[in-house]
Image 1 (cartoon, each protein chain N blue to C red):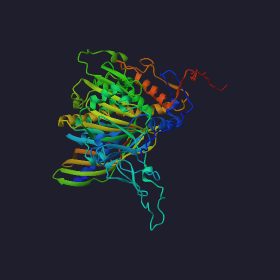
Image 2: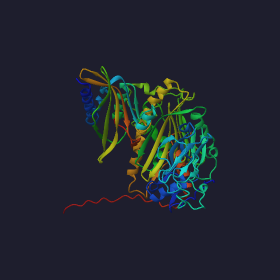
Image 3: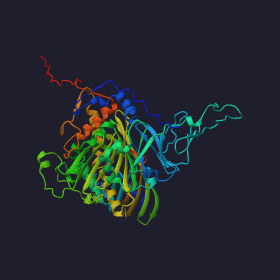
Image 4: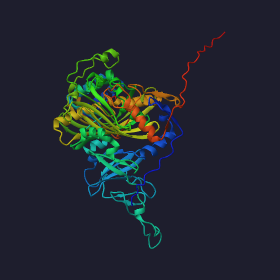
Amino acid sequence: MDNQVAIARAQAHYARCIDDGPLEDWPTFFTEDCHYRVTTADNYARGLPAGLIWADTRGMLTDRVSALKEANIYEPHVYRHMLGQPAILTESGGDVESETPFFVLRVTGGGPTDLFASGRYVDRYRVEGDQALLRERVVVCDSKEIDTLLALPL
Amino acid sequence: MDRLTGTTAGRAPDRSWPRSLTRVPYWVFQDEAVYRAEQDRIFHGPHWSYLCLEAELAEPGDFCATFIGEQPVLVTRDVDGEVYAFENRCAHRGALIAMADHGKARDFTCVYHAWTYNLQGDLTAVAFAEGVGGKGGMPPSFCLSDHGPRKLRIAVVHGLVFGTLSNDLPDIEEYLGEEILDRIDRVLGGRKPVVLGRFAQRLPNNWKLYAENVRDSYHASILHLFFTTFGINRLSQRGAIIVDESGGHHVSYSAIDRSATETTEYRDQNIRSESEYRLADPSLLQGFSEVGDDVTLQILSVYPGFVLQQIQNSVAVRQILPRGTDDTLLNWTYLGFESDTEEQRLVRMKQSNLVGPAGYVSMEDGGIGGFVQRGIAGASDEYATLQMGGDTAESSESRVTEASVRGFWLAYRQSMGFVPDDDAPLPEIGKHERTRVVRA
């Protein structure tokens, strides 16, 4: 299968997993020794390494989900991810680097639909057969401001 | 010319405040006139406000755009190596002098009419000052040095840059006091901080609700399950609250208690802090002794809007900026140190998951202020009650106290000029009769 198709398929399921569930499956889109980070365009451009969320194992992603379900207190809300087409930047066998623009709408409680975040996924995928797994995803948010809190992953 | 003339404190809104520090009127989070007066009396008044880190101004020409209250400010490092700060507002028509958050500049030229300022904020050139072809131009009496943004008084404490628009306050050492200085020194002294990331959180609440939250050690292990479950911060741990003499600054800290036996106090409360929750990857909580002592948590605040945090190995500064009666900007700057090993840096990255807008601990502080702001709507004649640990604003070994929250209000009503009033009206909270209308 074409890498572009494999990645687009994986991203569509990734978005659906966060938006419609089950969120517990979110870590399965990553390899075991993955890197996942949510940062801002400014930090990214300056090479500043910290993240709003920072994980270097799939276990840390599992913990993020279980913390949201069992430990953290926040007002219930839902996302709707809108993803653009992945732009394939480099391909070396099954190792693929791509970028995908996104925006995420959020509905908190009984409130309105708000534009919560826009940005791009800066990704490194491992593609095997028709399966594309994220080895690295850096979520680069365009704005440095987060409204109230970031609970669900982007 | 020294443009630092200080500010005249605006009139305090006509409000009376109960003498007891245990009562906080809800109008203080809602009243537009109070909000306006805070800009004059607190942020432009005789207080030191945090501006930025010296580490963000490493080289001459580096600048940082920040705020003192709502007021935009530029902080610079000049070629003489010194740090300067002045209002980020052109003396001509008031446009921003610099629009970028950070950058490097030889001088600043306002885009509107090209008035130019040096790195110390002095006006050095005015476009077409002589006119064109002998016509137009500024009047002969116009003197560059009479015009410029107001300059701030600056103080640098262990790499933290503070500024004030007022001359009417003591130097920073006296303002902070020895205990607070010691505790800043504990985290930042003798080490060179490195910025690891900057994030901002927009809070749907009054800035003082966040200032209270930071000083509130009572909530920390109740709202934040993470702290208690993993023993990062329990109220039963060894620790203390320090409240400075003004009340406005505080330190809360806790330490590993090597002799402690397991207590049942949390279990006995039957609160949600006891759970079976465990991490799949516990490396998040594997840290190192931050400065060679057993203190695993130190939260320090400086009145009005600064916080220095050490939560295990997550070190950050927070800047609380008011944006409206129910709108606050919280700036986070995550820090490491030049002396960090690669392993230590990795620990800081992992533990940054505890703080900031997505932090396992801090996300809840982002939401809770909004819950209060919404909860007190329609209750501007009513009062919060702060009786945990007594009614004073004194340091204590117990952290089951609201002493530092009361301290904040002691400093606040002093700086706002609210006069404590024994006769401040407290509303009767009556019981209402029930009425049921039934069809005959």
